[in-house]
Length: 100
Image 1 (cartoon, helix red, strand yellow):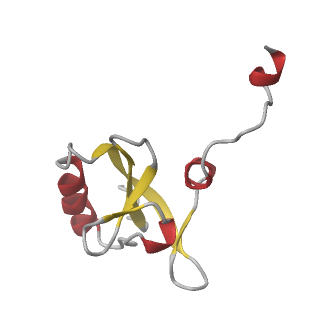
Image 2 (cartoon, helix red, strand yellow):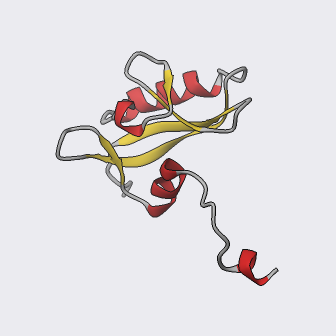
């Protein structure tokens, strides 16, 4: 049996700058997850993902990422990978970086 659809956001990286970006309700791109469209309909999410993937002059690697509505109703990540992408790169040496 297929899994039930869970809320998603569309995310990608900006083609020229590499920043993590999110698609808004208006179809524009933002660097702020709180401004992203929280998609709760699977068919709508699939269509919007196709639209995002066709914007090859702006984005690279667009995909649907699991999200949930926060206390204020804005999207929040549900997986550590998306939280890490949202907060940006770390700027200190740790792990393999510290061993070199």
